[in-house]
Image 1 (cartoon, rainbow, N blue to C red):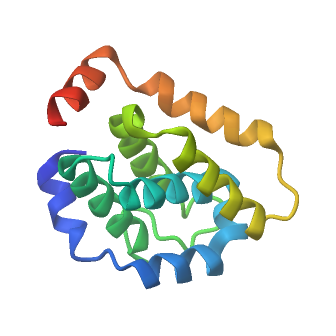
Image 2 (image 1 turned 120 degrees about the horizontal axis):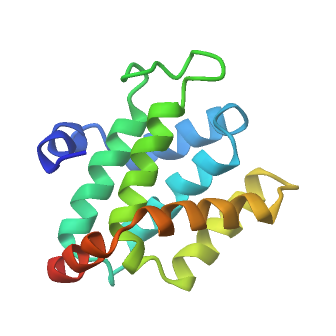
Length: 145
């Protein structure tokens, strides 16, 4: 996703709407989608994450909030596929800034909403965006700082 596209969705992001959407669609979206959104939310709150990375986060969370996006969220089994892809792309771009505190807060909130979840799913997701971040992306992220 290019920065121009992200800019288009920034105006859609509102914190209250994010919490409402996650609570409403958590079960349908699934643990991985919710955890990815929570990681981005808590990264957005962190003072250690640079402004340029936060712009990316706000744009992607804005896209996530749209009910009618590339693949409408109402479609069973497919609705959150595009959202998940966008969330993973953003996470791969900011993975350098995802510290233990951000991951801990996201896991705590995840535990609140999913009383029992498989920790392996969370680790699998973390491995997915860590692997998708190439060496070039990491250099670009470090330069953004």
